[in-house]
Length: 288
Image 1 (cartoon, rainbow, N blue to C red):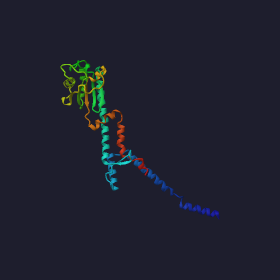
Image 2: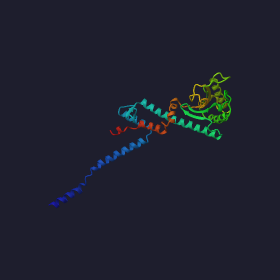
Image 3: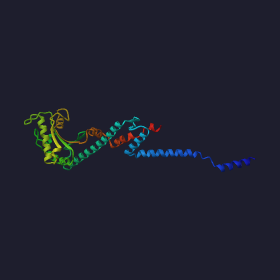
Image 4: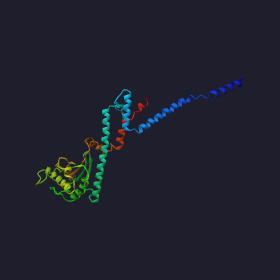
């Protein structure tokens, strides 16, 4: 009797087949995983314009328009005006990085040319938000004392630097400075002495170096902008100078970021991260 029941159960299993209901759950899980990886891949290769169109289209479908962007740092939606400000900030950061790279390349070109003419160390360089400063320090090396006449290596330095600057589009400011000691006749004050030396540098760079007159100007600051404090010979030498300032032609918002680029606080990587961040969902949103 038991053998007959066993054969009957075996025949019923063969007729109806094994239970395969687990496959439905398995296929649902695989489908969900596939969708997740497709979304991750789409996010990694997102086209910003297409993403904006998709985002706004979905927002419109849910009854919301112009919803802004998600800020990953705060986990909140950023209003459109603030999102635009972030985009502008990123663009300014990128432009500042490019401007610093260009100015450093110009500095390297000038330094290499001076070295090739045996003039290495005759000038100092400074890079800041104004641009690139080529500093002729200790004017007694370049000028006769209490005079505006160019002497020594002054003409050689200017004739090396000027043709390089002539090939750029930057504006140039030649700025004369003096130490705190009062000059002698024929210069009643340091204003006349410093401005006279700046004009002589300008004339050499225009008349011999080939710089277009509309791109260059000269100004004398007297002793009002010292680099070093005190009355030591070293301090006085630092303050007797003519600065050739290659003026950055970038917008003010870009120039304001140049010091951060110089300090390494803004790089290509950080600006790229700032660009991508507003479009990524926070982890808390993914877990909902």
